[in-house]
Image (cartoon, rainbow, N blue to C red):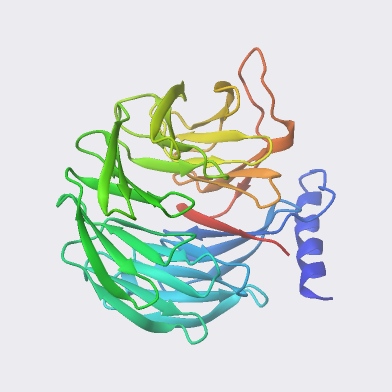
Length: 370
């Protein structure tokens, strides 16, 4: 029996005992990082069941995956390592030891390199995937908070927090370039899809700063009326959604017009978000009320809300747009919403598709098609 048939058979058997109806076809595998459990739970999304737990030598924090590589990469801050979990064998493969813990991991769009942020060491490093080793190391003048990679240009940008500065990096040479003064306390940063503008969240001024990569000047500051803690793009890059302290709503910014749009009510203390392509929905976690709010992006209206597990802190949409996956940190499970069946209702109550126990303190997930 090959691996795919084994996964399908094992997951189907697990669901038969619960009397759950099988879905028609597998939707891929979700790899869920369980921080307290020191493991990766592998969930078959065709049958919605855990088929394996892969033990780790440390607590996982960040995950990164690219279709060009047969592995999911995981950072373990306690051991200051990044390791590859082989998706064909469901076991740990190569690993690399770094100078300090990694807080964030991101692939370049073509999958040629994996970048890792090391706040304690004040570094950002480029990892070679072929040998999983450091091939470029950039030393930063202050402790980094966040970073982003331009999709269309060979740039990386790193926010430097309370200093109000951003470091620009040439990804081709792996060299530090300009240090940009934007003021305030810089949190999350994102490149516009075409790479021509960089957007920085000014947490102290509650605004979004637009930086022109061509003229190397701050273009405009857009007030967003909340502390911009979480940023989420609409998949086509035409809208940027923001949540944060100070407003029980999602604020919409239009990156190509450098304008702020409407604010959509999104439950109590909205946090992390994820956006589906079709239908165009925005899913918003409400950790304090253990709910997820669903918004229709086109109509700017709330579709409804659903109860999930305790302390939802991570959201993801599967590549086939079939499911919205919600990781609930305190209850140790993954709530699943079936996107095609969601629609506006008078009661504003949305039914949860299913709940999958995944392990202790799930914090991140990636989905791979099989």
